[in-house]
Each structure stands twice: as structure tokens, then as C-alpha cells.
Image 1 (cartoon, rainbow, N blue to C red):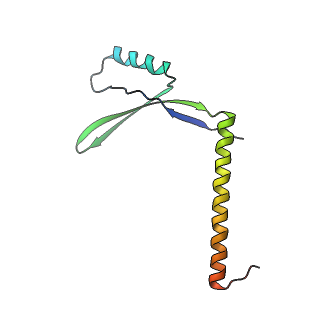
Image 2: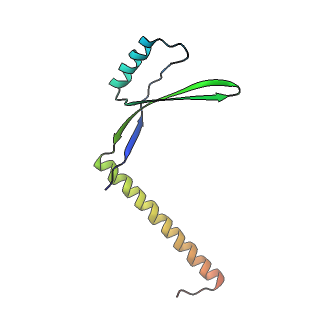
Image 3: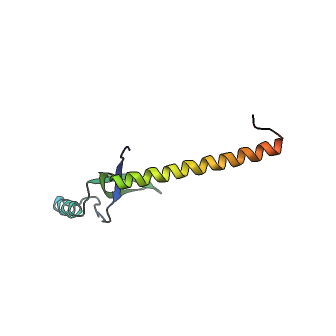
Length: 102
């Protein structure tokens, strides 16, 4: 069982535009830390000739044993479903083209 690093969005809006006061940033950082945030992702983009900031707040942690098992079970079910589908398709094609199993 290999655990993965998980990311969880923290529901908080950081209204940091151009010229935001350092005191406001410190205040916001204190609030989001109390909400469990561990990371702030800041991206700059352009649309229709205007630039904008996209700021996301999230926490990052290793998944629990339960989450890991749940993820692995879902993955196994998905793989089993793909295999079932592939075998059905193979059978259909063998019938269509008169191919016998060897």
C-alpha cells in the first residue's frame, strides 16, 4: 500500500490585487493557517488583453490508511471493469469475424 500526497481546497478568498498591504497579507495568512491551509498557489494569467491573478488556497497531507485503501479499491474496480469490457469486445469481434479461441 503506497500512500499518495493529497490536496484539499480551503474555502477562503484571498483578495490580493496589485498594491495589497503587507499587513493584509499577514492577516490573511493567519486566518488560512487556522483553517488548515498549508499552501497558497498564485498564478498570473491573461484574457482578452487583461492580466489577472488566480489565487488558490489548499492544504496538503498524506492520505490516511482508509483513504489509501478506498483509492486502491476504486482503482481495482475500474481495472476490472475495463478488463470485462475488453473481453466482451473481444468475444463480439471473434463472433463477427469467425475467429475461434486457440
